Image (cartoon, rainbow, N blue to C red; front, top):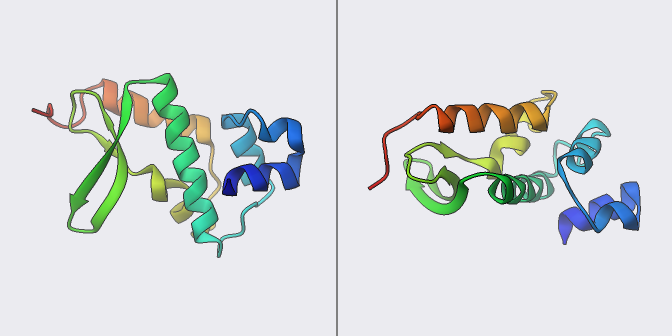
Length: 120
């Protein structure tokens, strides 16, 4: 709902009915949400993760590590993890430009190259 509401407000109802990487990128290019809107940025990270899962062998898992417990993408059969929850928010909060296609390509290349050990 959060991301759909942002898309609807910025791009209209038609865009909100079919959110893809291009729609998310348009929001980021427009600096929406603002860097201090961490929750909304993390919601965008979840949508980004859902899009990756729909197109690849990434899947959602809850991961416990030294930083806490977070929903994270793992690549099927590998230990490669991609924390999409904060991938967007941290970069926006740091004033970095984001190219979601490049970010998705980077994650997929690393995962397919076998970054990390196999999950048993």
